[in-house]
Structures are given as structure tokens and as C-alpha cells.
Length: 294
Image 1 (cartoon, rainbow, N blue to C red):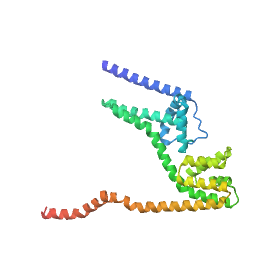
Image 2 (cartoon, one colour):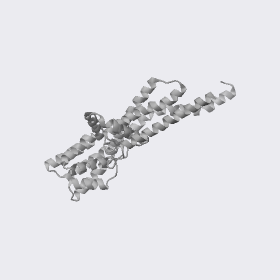
Image 3 (cartoon, one colour):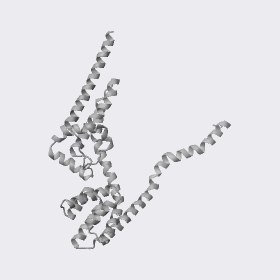
């Protein structure tokens, strides 16, 4: 009877704690208010399950961080073309939430087993904190590959539009509207937005070069700015740039094709050759075993 009362009291305590936690979470979410992302892209998929927690931390902690630190985070997001995905406050909050969430999830089975490792929890906290940073680097890598692949296509669009009589800004607008969607399209949209906001074409392109930091884009921006300063033909400049970028893309493809046999050597030696020898020698070994030679 006494044991039943203890179990009942423990269950009621756990239920009360869970109910209080849910009520506290609902109260905090109501204090944060509605999440307005009208001009923002959807957050990354791995953050969606904990997005309410990220917004709560952003509201109570992220907004109170030093302005210099937030500006540094915002510059990093802008440089990686993620300024329309996360704000600086949300990025810090995501790091904070994952740094607490991973150790908390790991602590539940550890506590139940009675083997709590503080070192493991610290390692998980560090992994959780750098998880958004790993996502940023992966997004940057994918963006760079997409830009290098689609830049020659957009240069063809620009050269055709300029050849049809449009100026560079009009050609850029048509290329953005008709060109394939992706990272290069987003970057040129930002260039158009900068031009429409009053910046000069050279300044908008220079911001593109600083934001992307790729050799192909740097050469393209330098050529366009130089052609504008010298009064050269924009059509010829764009045609030359398109041909050069296409040639470089073919050269990269040839280089990757030539590197493929070298990269296959280790898998061949480690996996394919031993398996081939086993398949060839197995019947011979079985025959020797049947004859009693082994």
C-alpha cells in the first residue's frame, strides 16, 4: 500500500512538472508573438522542430546581445547568402538551443542507466553549438558549386539581351526573370535590389564580388566595371566572359574525369581486388579440402 502511494505521488509529480513546463512554454511563445517572416526564406529543415525554442531564445537573449557581435554574425550570414534565411539573433539562438538540446536528450538515457558522463555531455554541447556553423559551411559549398555551374548560362542570357538592345540593368532583369532558379539567380536579384535602392552599378557588382568571393565572379565583375569605365562594348565583354567561363567549366570537367581513375585506386585495392581473389580461390580451396591436400 505504501509503495503504491509512493508510485502515485511520483507519477503526480512528473505529470505536474510536465504540465507546468508546457504552460510555461505556451506563455513564453505568447510573449514572443507571431513569427513574421514575410520577406524571409523558410528556415532550414533541421531547425523546424525546435523553431519555437529558437524564437524564444532570440526574443529574450538574442535581442540583448552586443551590437558589435550581432553585426559580425550578420556579416557572416550575408557573406554566405543566408541573410534572408536567418537573422543574427536567430543564428545565435540556434547555436544556443542545440548546445542545450543535445546534452539534454543524451542525459535522459544516461540518468536512467545511472552512468552520467560529464565529459560526454560537454562534447555534445560543443557539437550542438557548432552544428549551425557546419550547416552554414555546407550551404556555402553548395552555393559556390551552383554559382560556378550556372554563371556561363547567365552570361549567355546577358549577352543576348544586350545584343537585343537592352542596357546592362535591363538585361540583368530579364536574365533573372527568365534564367534558371538557384544561387546565381538569388545573387543577381540582390544586385538588382541594390541598383534599385540607389547604388551605382559598379558598387552593386562590387558587393556581389565581396559577397560571393569566387574567382569566376571576380573576373566577371572586374571585366564589366572596366568596360563601363573605358566605354568598351558591353556585348563583346559579356560574350568573351561567357566563352571563357564555358571553357573553364569544360576544363574542370576534364580534370575531374582524369582524376577519377586515381581516386578509384584505393577502393580497388581495399575492396574489389580482395573480393575478386576470394571468389577465384574459393573453388580451388574447396577442391583441395575434398582431396585432403589441406
